[in-house]
Image (cartoon, rainbow, N blue to C red; front, side, top):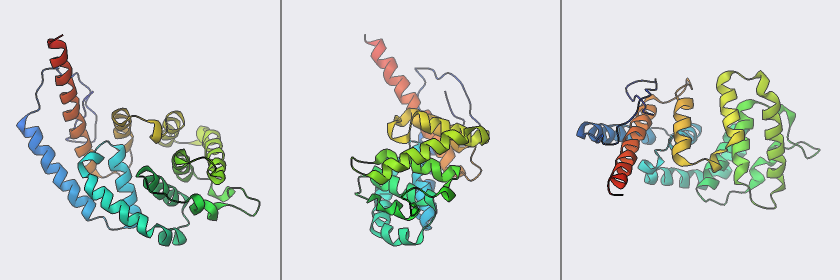
Length: 235
């Protein structure tokens, strides 16, 4: 499977095992990488930065920007309590929690206390697909003894499953994929391949990032095919 990086469509074709990575492709990858580095630097908004980092990592190109992502997440960690006191959006709080735990930061699950009602349950008013989906992905990073995250898992999974018949095809596909294989359990390349096709359907996607991810996917695929060809040639 090869992605067409010139537009938002997907080009399906067989990649020849002996097909080399051209100098043009390598130069284009460097050019687009620099463009993406600028996009990261020029995205100061806290919520937008969270979403951009998440997309970069899920598209499988996070390894190109490890230093920039580390620096951004360090700042987000250092200020997350301040932002959490202001954020009442479940999706944003859950996304920030997941990205930080994913990076190894010891973020407390108490950030979700604000979403609990007087009876100790998650508030019914929180039931919206985007928030539930992000909460479901976030609780995959729970550790033993975090009761609030156990409640969050039951709350999010049950509501996502019951809401499936009423979702549009775009959301339904994301929810089904998440319930089957959450981000935590998804392999990098397989997850990236699936997310590229999902991300391009998102009307708010970043075109520079999408094209870069497709080009990177194609180049890595060629590298793997070449390695396989070399191994089989000498066996």
